[in-house]
Amino acid sequence: MALTATEVQALIREWVPMAEDIDLRVEEIRPSYARVCVPFREQNLRPGGSISGPVMMAAGDTAMYAAILGRLGHVAMAVTSNLNINFMQRPGQADLLAEATILKMGKRIAFCEVGVTSRGSDELVAHVTGSYSLPPSDKKTGG
Amino acid sequence: MALTATEVQALIREWVPMAEDIDLRVEEIRPSYARVCVPFREQNLRPGGSISGPVMMAAGDTAMYAAILGRLGHVAMAVTSNLNINFMQRPGQADLLAEATILKMGKRIAFCEVGVTSRGSDELVAHVTGSYSLPPSDKKTGG
Amino acid sequence: MALTATEVQALIREWVPMAEDIDLRVEEIRPSYARVCVPFREQNLRPGGSISGPVMMAAGDTAMYAAILGRLGHVAMAVTSNLNINFMQRPGQADLLAEATILKMGKRIAFCEVGVTSRGSDELVAHVTGSYSLPPSDKKTGG
Amino acid sequence: MALTATEVQALIREWVPMAEDIDLRVEEIRPSYARVCVPFREQNLRPGGSISGPVMMAAGDTAMYAAILGRLGHVAMAVTSNLNINFMQRPGQADLLAEATILKMGKRIAFCEVGVTSRGSDELVAHVTGSYSLPPSDKKTGG
Image (cartoon, rainbow over all chains, first blue to last red; front, side):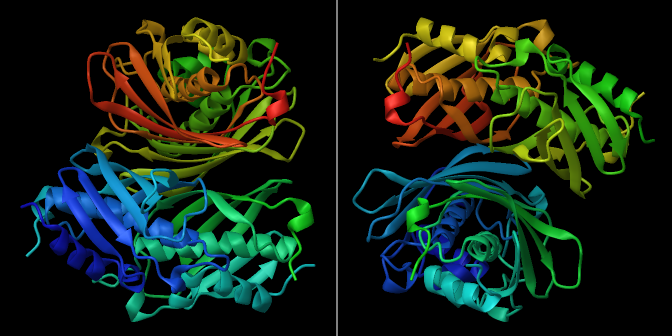
């Protein structure tokens, strides 16, 4: 039932239209883990060269969604319930990476955390925690 | 020093490129208040007709930024420090409205809350709180 | 089914033992609203005279619980799911008030916000949002 | 300048009076890490045997404070700025442990995360993130 990074990316681009706008890519799926990338592009930048907050939030949210899809398979009905983000420093002029880990997978709710970094650096630029509401199990498997 | 809705919209579209992607509009600025709108468009929708989470987060974040700009004037260096969002129900197939109120304007930090609704309905679809880090006062006024 | 402030206070002191430690009182219950008070006492203070963070969080959490009890009646099984608090300034040397409003009462989850002030002042010292997970409706009414 | 667990515990009990009420202990301090314990005691329990939310929040908050004190030495003026907690499951009838890690130590603000577990189990019962506002560096060292 687990999905590959390519399959998860296709689902995310279908379910989160903004992911298309920012050319979001799913780079890796492992058990309880996903890494997504927002490629460095001029049009995502604020003047001065920093990536804006909404791009980082979109990356964090979709990284959590990717980790859940990688674990549960097609869960089109999963929806974010709560998301909290701390912005720690300005991202560099580099690809933005968001690495999500599942903290707890319950029956009705999944909790995740996400570290956001600039490619090539270990320092966090933002940190996200969130919960996803899961559909009842008989609706979890899509076509 | 206060700015009009038109001026705030121009600044937001310059500083938050994603605002352009979703055609975000600043509808009203009053003291300590701003209302922004994401017009209903097919390309912002998830399959099934719901607006995706990142669009709601972008609306909430920019509504807070608009309220601060409306109060302080050009504060290009203000950056979101923390944002927390609770998603309460699926938005309707209508314009998305985000109404931000400044809870406290300190010297170094501003706190806001945002109610997100579908136009024509009073029920919250999401609720946002956030803090913005403000630049030192000698840097607050831009060109 | 609605409960009085006295009844809600008795339930809270039973369910949240820390409420007893800080002498928490339920002052008012109205539809979708509750106000609780932590009386000013030397032993709740940090050196320098400020009320510590955990006291403010306990007040915020129990105010939300009080608003839900006031609305639903005996809901002993309701549990906090997420709580977010922004600390805005040091509280004064006065009673601490926490006023909770229900933002949305769903079937499975209730969302609230809480303004925390020092008695005699309108300025927020802290602001809380939170969600409560509700028991299935056949378990909602206690003895 | 780093402090021992015993020294940190004494400072926390002075600065957070509620820590005394729940008999909070600082078990270990390592660079960028602290573990605190709330011993299992009947009087911290809700009916049914679960530890109430405010006790878990107090443990999370003080664990962050302990990690910062362990890193910076006497920082009496550090104050919590934002705290977000997700409650994941009912704690067991056992000591409650809160393990804080510093995510980023900036000049003006420190970001932490905390995993809360029941002693003897690896499963998270709650997860906390928070930010602490730090005093200017010339005020950081107390007596």
